[in-house]
Structure formats: C-alpha cells, structure tokens
Image (cartoon, rainbow over all chains, first blue to last red; front, side):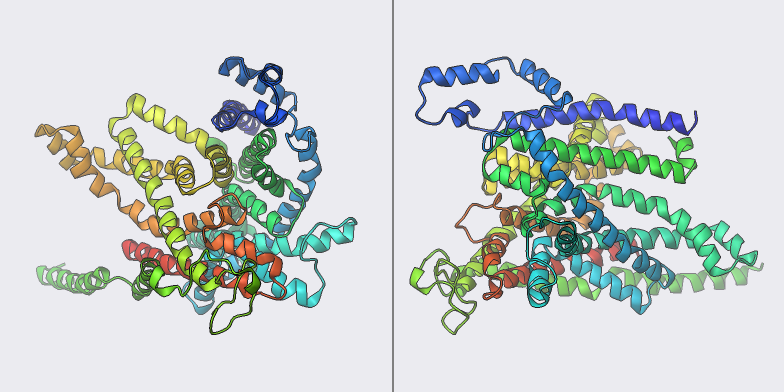
Length: 314
Length: 289
C-alpha cells in the first residue's frame, strides 16, 4: 500500500469521528435547560402559539429523529437560524471566519519566527546560559493569561505609539494588517513556549543520532549537516506538536479576539454564549471541532509526505 | 582481568553511586521556592477576611474609579468597590476552583483508566472509545459549550472541566497499569487469592500513579488559567463574585487612565502559576534523575 493508500485510509477514519462529534454537539445543547420555542415566542405567548412553534421546530419528535434531522441539515451546510439576529448561522460563520483565519495565519507565522531560531539555538547549546534563559522565559510565558498579555500590549505598545489600534479590524487591507499584528503576537507568545520545547528536544535527539555522526565523520560542514539532516528530521515532530496544539491555538483565538474586539468566529462563540443563542453556539462548536479534525488530517498527511517511514508504521 | 581489578572497579562504582544517591533524594531548591510561593497564596486565601480592609462587594458609587491611596491601596473600580479587597477575596475562588479543576479530572480519569487497564475487555473498550470522541474536541471550546448548557457557576465549571479533562489521566494510568499488571508481585498477589479490588487499590495503583502526580502542578496552572479565561469572557464565575479573570476584563475599558485595574490581577495570576510551575518542573527533573 502506497502513500495514496495511507491518505485514503486516514480520510475514511475521520468519518465515524465526525459522526461522533455531531452527536456530542447535538447532545450537549439538548441538555441545555430552557425551552428554545419559549425563547422565540417570548413570555407572553399563548400555549397554542408555543405549541405551534414547538411543532415547527420539530421539538415534539423523538430525540433520535431530531438527531438524524440535525445531521441531515449539517450535511447540507444548514446550521439553522440565530435566535438573536435571525440570520442563518452559516452566514454568520462565513462573515466571521476570514478574520479568524487572518489571526491564525499571522499568529502561526509569528510562532514559527520565534520558535525556530530559539529552538535551534537552545538545541545547539543545551544547558548553557542562553538555554536556561529561554527556558525560564518560556516558563513565565506559560503562566501568563493570553488576554492579560494582550491588554499589556495595548497599554505598552498600542496606546503610546499609536501605530496599532487597541481593537477592531478596520475596513481596508492596511487597516486589517495593522489590527492583526498585536493579537497575532499575543497568540504567538502563548504558543511559542510549547514549540520551542519540542523543537529543542527533537533537534537534540537528531543531533545525537548515528547518521549525523556518520555525516560529520565524512567531513560534511556543520551548516550543511544542519540543513540537510538535522532540520529535515526534526521538522515532522515539530509539525505534529503544532497540530496537537491547534485546540489550544483556537481557544487562544477565542480569548484574543474578545480582548481585541476582532469580529472573528472566536468572538462569535462568546457573543452567542452570552446571548444564550443555541443554534449559533451549536454551529460555532461544530466549526471549531471540524477545524481541529482538518488540521490533524493535514498534519498527518504532510508528515507522511515528509517522512516515508510513517506509512510503514501505520 | 584479575579479581583485584574487579573489586576496585566495583567499589569505585558503588562510591559514585553513593554520592549520586544522596543527590537523588534531595529535591531541587526551586521546588521549595515554589512551595513557599504557593504557601503564601494559600495563607492569603485562608485569611482573606482578616487581610482585606473592606467588604469586596460594598459599592460606593460616589467614590468610583479612585486612584490608589492610603485608604484604597489599588484604588476603586467603576462601582466604587475596593480593588485590593476584591483581589484578596478572589484568592478564595481561583485557588480552590483551579486546584479542584485539575484534581477532580485526575481522580475520575485515574479511576476510569485503572478499571479499563486492569479489567480490559468491554470495560476497556467502552472507556477508551468514549475518550476518543472527547479528545476530538478542542478542550476549552467544549468547556464553553458545557458551561453554557449547565449554567454559569462554580459547580458547572468543575463538572465541565472533569467531563473534558479526565481523558488524558485515563490514558496515562491505563498505560501504566497495562505495564504493572503483568509484573511478578501482582501475579503473586493474585495467586494468593486477594480480591481484585484490593490488588488494584493497594498494589497496582500506588505504583502507577507517580506520573499523574508529577503532572498535577502544571495541570493546576492550566485549570487556573482556564477558569480566569472563562470568567474574562463573561462565561465563568458570575458577577459580582470577585475573580481574577473577571477583574482583568472589568478593568480593560479603563486601561488608559486606571491601568492598574487590569494589570495587577494579571500579575497575581502569574505569581501563582510560577510557584506551581517551579514545583512541577523541579519534581519532574527530580524523578528523571
């Protein structure tokens, strides 16, 4: 079975997982107290009106029927209508998702810009002063709430310099870039310590391996050894760790979008939860779970392409 | 090689092993620094009513957003409440909820993982397949959805943390138990006719739980940060109960002029996290020696 077979099998394995995810989202919101029909018609409606809405929403059907209907709607991209704005939830997501993708793209880029050099330096000089300094800084960074880091950046950078807005996303492309820089740095500060640590470990392991020693004894220069063997072999575990952190990254996006008033899906789920908007929170939760599944999938495939041994192991 | 040679190398080895052993038994210094920091936090939480100069909920609207002074060390918030008193009383929310937010999932996960690992079969399948579905979700997104469903408050937060976070502990202890189950002393206990409840509780679990305990301090940091983040978003501890994350959120609109309202509670969070991280890192290093 070749690489194609591995990718295909990996794709098929996600199907039962997706069904489980939809079921869990459905059940979590099913146990939510409060009558959705009552929320729509208001407190003054008559029992008759209430019953009519319940019938329309299908709330009188057995739970299994409701789940299958929900699953059918989800498969057609229909996530229902927001109780608050009465907009289709899929439209709300479509409007907000680009902002979050901006944040995630810039945030991941900054994370790599911080963690690749620092991971390399600490791996090259383990237990030296620079290593201790980076690890100490990482320890502190991991205890800082990301929203607090964001507020401190607003206080110390945005307000005094005026280069970056303290919140919002702006209307033009340059505005977007200016508004995304500080949130992306905040996100990078909360993720980079994990990345640096895993990069350091995997690079130290690769540098100790026999084939690097062989390369060195054959007279390959250190920079060439580094590029050709060490970085290439240290990359797959680093990508896996970045992918494993995606759940943490997405929660970071939720918190940071709220801190900087960025109109992304992260702020969306918070507003939906505050407004007790059940269809919206259902849609956003599903979206976040799908993003995680997609990232795991992509990471597995990229790792398989970079490291041919993966298909043998699977 | 002569016998004499053999003896000298052996004695040489045992002397290095001896110094190594004394070093091993001693915990690194930073563990004690961490214990001291966490100890101070616990004392502040216990003695909050004595330490706080004012009622943390008492509003004085005429005295709102006052600057720090000898009367109000950290000024007052937008409702004229004493910020220092609120900060002190918040210790009584963040500390217990943060600790329980890590300890409860650890207990539930260890119990389920131990049962799955020791008995195997359908118990194992049931526990581990449930774990798979929970693990597909981004942890805190699921926590937001669960707290939304259960209603805000300490109990729902702890239930949500436990439902979502037990998975990692279950996997950890299951792996350990699969390893220990086959060891001679467990076989001996089984041959001696001890009931499985006793073997599991007295002979297997105590030997497999080390890893879980080593990770516990850093998990308390994560739970505390998670609680603060939920409350910052307005989805955690309901107002007006003082809580660090909620205080940071409440101060954000006034960041330009009353910058201490948001920044000081954050420093308090960092201090608690650092104390626990020093303990966690130090103990981890100690066990790896």
